[in-house]
Amino acid sequence: MTSRTRTDLAAVWPPTAAVAAAAGHEPKSPMKAIREKCVDCCAGQFSEIQRCESVACALWPFRAGKHIYTAAAMKKAAHGASFQESEASHGED
Image (cartoon, helix red, strand yellow):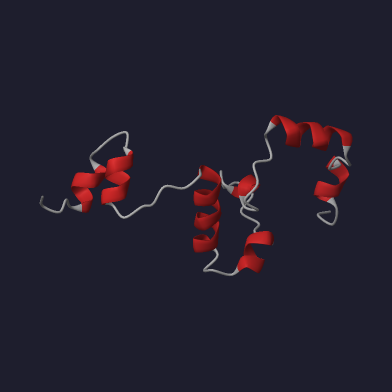
């Protein structure tokens, strides 16, 4: 079997597990993939992931490696302390 180029692999839409494997990817959960992207984006500096201010990034809410929109997480958030609108604008006057 001949090796496929990046262009060949990218042309397969939607990607399959076989194409991902051919591109060198190992099976992993979406949350782990998100966390790895955050580590990459922050040049391997884990402390920078926690301080990330790229709040417009689609991955930002998941940067801690946790899915915050599961039923259990939503229920816990509803019973816990909620983030106040005033806290978001604190110090931005």
